[in-house]
Image (cartoon, rainbow over all chains, first blue to last red; front, side, top):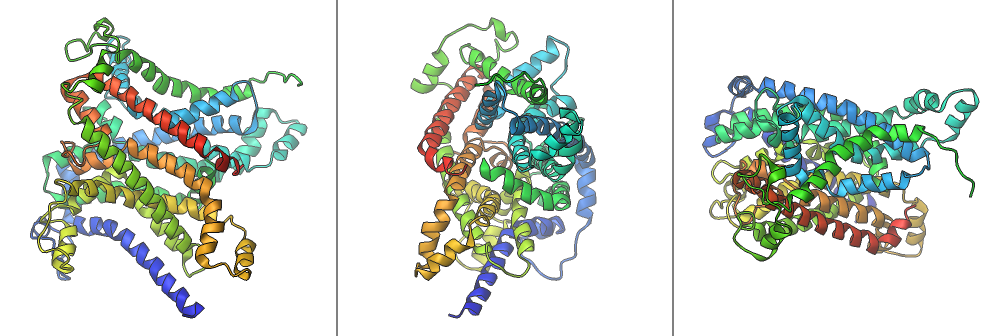
Length: 281
Length: 305
């Protein structure tokens, strides 16, 4: 087999892998546009089927999806903002300074990743419950209860991604700024932050994807629809309308869109950032 | 050694992150440790500081007695979680590596392929759970339609969400979502491999396979070691996919995993003391695994620096 033929074969194989891995997503979108009857009649496909856009309207009407959607945006938005900020600060400290306790901090961050907060959902639930009942600080069933938790859950992994970025920026840039009369903080804000914008965008995207996907704690810490996010809404929907797959797939498609948009908007930074930050570990 | 002057700046930068981590990680861990020593159930839950102190009794019950509700099914969940974690982690790494090697060539629209391949990883895991839960349905699911009606590979439609099949019903979607990011990380590592190493090997008459074993794999080893560990950790705590696929109910003894079991049992039987004890046993096993893993591969990780 000559080189050219072999290359064509490998290209075909590559695109076959791409198509195969996209099939479930394609099926999700297609099912969201099929009628309830078409789905229950054994899923046979024909080219004559009309596209049932009304599924998308019914989905919003049946389960008050807009409420869950807005709640998700609020919770994930604030989480992304705070977690990115805290991770950026912490990562800069760990990337640039050797100080008493810097090793301990690094180890603590690594250990937190190994023992995710998930394992301690019972004490955390009790803590939140007690804060409301005994101290008068409501944490269950609130936006800030979820945001506070997610910020601390997603900060450790984000610190490593950001640290990789800061390590790749030459130290001389700040030194020069400091010689020119900038303070340490001034050099960080005026020199380092603008250069590391791609890294910050990558980290923020990463946090947004994680927060958008959070079901475990959201399910446990919220019980009123006013603050519940999309995953909880879809899970409740799942229980109530077990067989309305047409509406379920419409809801699934709509809730995938924001993360997909975030990914495409920041893709350039994101893929690079993930690769740079995570390889070093 | 010269004594460094004290600078507050790095501490101030670290402060918010550390405070948050202390509040949400350390506090519950300490509180959980204390809770695991209490007889904590629906009767004593509200005043948990007054609950009877029973020392290590919760641990003794879980490890050596078969009567508690949490203990029932723990064996299955433990076996499933271990198998699931191993299968998913290894499959995600092997497939990710294979596709990364396939993509690490020059071909038209290379970037588009790479972006599209990453999409399953972008789809939220709760969506993956509902989507595949639908795809696995016996009568209306596309999997049976393709396997039975289109390809005629099977004579009759199997139940995918029952019995031993349900183990694969949770493994396959998890792998589908996990391998793309492995592919991305391997691809990034592959692009750092100096081209002349391969050229020299080709001149020496080393086959493509030989080059893969003797050049590519050793260079990728640190990435594989680290990513296997993170995959392992992630999958041990897997929750969303299984819980959405089975609507939060009992998935049966082949698909029940530790985290779904722990939440289900804790909130239906209110066995918070025993739940906390199970969490501590899991944490200990996890820390032992990570310590042993890091120690055994210390040398190959150090080469990375």
